[in-house]
Length: 276
Image (tube, rainbow, N blue to C red; front, side, top):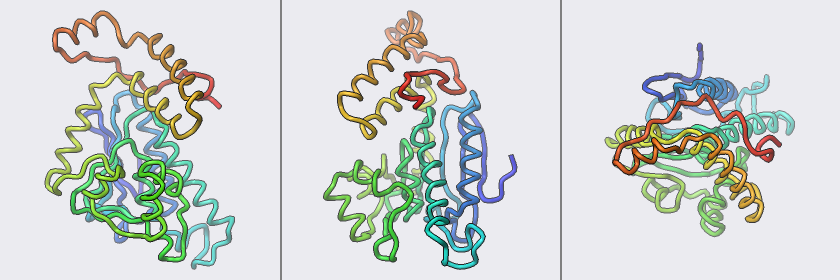
């Protein structure tokens, strides 16, 4: 696949998407479109078990770059044009959030604005302890438009979210880990190793069980408690009908061996709720 603003590589069951549009490495419309195309390919490749989203340069995920987008040469975009960019970003991040394969965001340098909102949608985020993070929109005369106002409060709680979103404070990778915005923060020279270790762990998971567990967990955000429990019942039936867990897997577990599961392109069937 030929891309201009990202690098897309597949190796050892891992698809890596690298934002590669210097000097700012910002997320313009071209980056969003190319990321979606790469994610579509990884989703439909049965040999891909894990997807990694990272960025070139110093490893810092910049936010939205709307300057010159949608055919205009300045900031004088109409509300409809701004909305078009926001809607595409929402579609992309929702795709990340609901994809049935694990997606890891990597932030060696940190993230700001829309780049940080991109990481909010990932299943896991590995960062350096020195990385810098912020949602500075209110200090710039902007507001969050790519999902951060909804995802971040759900992850860190109401009071902490107000401090982050309504003051625009900056914090490091270790602090991001402590409040739940980063899965793990490690020294810079250990980031790659941590990502590799996480990928290796995810590659041994049963793909159908993993995918449905992620979809069931998403219901915590999407519906009420009772409906979430009902969905879990539906998922329980679907996963068990796939027979990933069987006598051989049980024997491997008892003997201390790692079971080997059949690779899947994607989960092609599921509860009716998923199809709505």
